[in-house]
Amino acid sequence: MLHLASQSPRRRQLLEQIGVDFAVLDVDVPEQRMPGESPGAYVSRVARDKALAGLAGLGNPQDAIVLGADTEVVLDDEVFGKPQDADAAAAMLRRLSGRTHAVISVVWLVAAAREQSVECVSQVRFAALDEPAIAAYVATGEPFGKAGAYAIQGRGAALIEHLQGSYSGVMGLPVFETARLLHDFAIPSR
Ligand SMILES: Cc1cn([C@H]2C[C@H](O)[C@@H](COP(=O)(O)OP(=O)(O)OP(=O)(O)O)O2)c(=O)[nH]c1=O
Image (tube, rainbow, N blue to C red):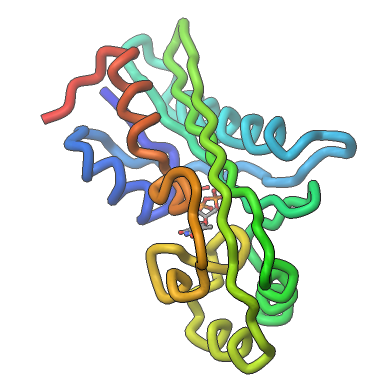
């Protein structure tokens, strides 16, 4: 049985989109980058920790497979997670304005005697945003709970000039890469 160790409604939706049956697990993993840790290593560690916490929460049964995922926005080697408040959201959007940043998503599958992962990196170019545009977007409330303070699947789409990579990866779960991983674990889809 596949379990999704995530509270993200986007991840649930994207996994449903590829016709996989799964149960949702509640996990709470600290997300804090360690000194000297590269952005990719950090995203991988958090995705793995979520999957392992999910498996441990189930009591490490032999037949469970748990999927953990993490998504972060990276600019100039700095990792932008979910903004704490409106000021933090506006500050992130100001930094992203007129520039290209990376979105790293890692999907990690763990089972009792096996684990495997995939990393998906996309490049997103933002339009130049003036202060009224930033304030208006923050006021929609959409930046909260989203890495980098925007949602490509929402009104944030209007801020994006160009995407190179995976739309679903930016949203939190790269579906192509995830489908391959599930196939490798012999998890069927409907
Ligand atoms: C960049 C971007 C991120 N996001 C979301 C995806 C993730 O849900 C979130 C990044 O935070 P994550 O820590 O990856 O995930 P989460 O806290 O939402 O869920 P969980 O840890 O329980 O799995 O940002 C979008 O929805 N759209 C976007 O365009």
